[in-house]
Length: 602
Image (tube, rainbow, N blue to C red; front, side):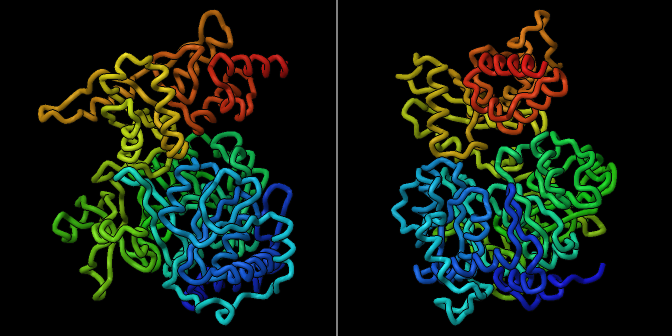
């Protein structure tokens, strides 16, 4: 492959502003971002970010200063992120769809000096100075600033690769999310790796799929805007796995996308990303997914936790059915050591724990020195003073140097591609006065049907409380602090199964959460209500459901909702908007929507 401009300059340009501005210098007229009917060129995007950056500097933003950003998916979000980085600051992403309690915790813990939000984000009372980025008064003030690139002379201090770039909060085993602090140090190697692996052509469309609150969002950002491609953005409902995601990718002529296996599993691959790339990441890429998605496009498989700059290794292109799908080899500037319990290197094919090192390593956990010291340890394989991250991931390396992921050493799980500490869910539910004991497990047959189940034993004074009312109350208690993907289905129990040592038998609970079903047959009476209930039982892999039940209380989530909508369309010719699935309070309500849609189409 011919070396690209981004690849050749990666060694000299060390920060996001430097690399982005080098792209602008050669690709100014190329479209940088598309969102709906809006298209913004590199020149325009750079100018808008420069003008806002100067207002941020005036407001006190400089190197290592955190700026919280609560802006929905839009071109304004990209401008805000670039402006913060150009000012020398680091961004703290606040997904506006997250519970206010969780966002408040992040802000209180991280202590940003400023909040950027839109006028629509009004639910946050964070006691932080703020700028409303779509306020006409601010727009007018920003328009008066110069639009040339911001220099170190204008910043409050020179920006270097050692300064903070972003802080991402992840699920915490102690019950509260923890902030991972990343610097610019790993960006040049990230850009170099992307250039070698993807070879993005000018203006090629890169899908922006991940939530702003995840580091995968920065991967999409970098793959497009630090390579000269075009970042294709869409509303959240247009990105739901299945038909909505497929239509969005076709409409934007997307050539490159990064998606978790759960999204790949329910999205039809034919005609997508033709001669482009699909990268599976966030969870295990199965053989069947590899066989399907390697046809007509290049399939890569990435690995890396939030504690490194988006990733650590990448494998592929993967071709056809393989015995096991590799996570590849370390990318530029990264090292993955497979170590035993004594930190000795494991031999070929031996399973050990992944320890990650290199330029992309995080500073550590924000304001958590003891936790940082326990997870970021001295690196005996590197220069004096270097560190490595103890990932908690298990795996092995083969004779060719290819890495394979084999599981976890702790209670952390991946659900639909999201990193989840079950302990955080248990801690939240245990804070409710009606709860005596909680055990959370993951149920489901495969990636697309996975869901979290929390088994709850109520306190003695609440044992006679109506179970349905208690479940509803506990789910609402969870929603106030946990994002959607962490809100569990709840089962009230009188007692827990136990092991011989008296501890809760979590394996038994997992088996209980994954009943084996042979599939639900269509009801004899053919009513839409009974037809829907049969599909819901089969989709959720549950033994029973009633018209009064809510799809999401039964264990449904956004991916399963998309799967259910797809079944309605394919098996019964009924097109039901995804919004209707989220708004229906009961299966009876959803059945009426289904019936009305069928009659309207007839």
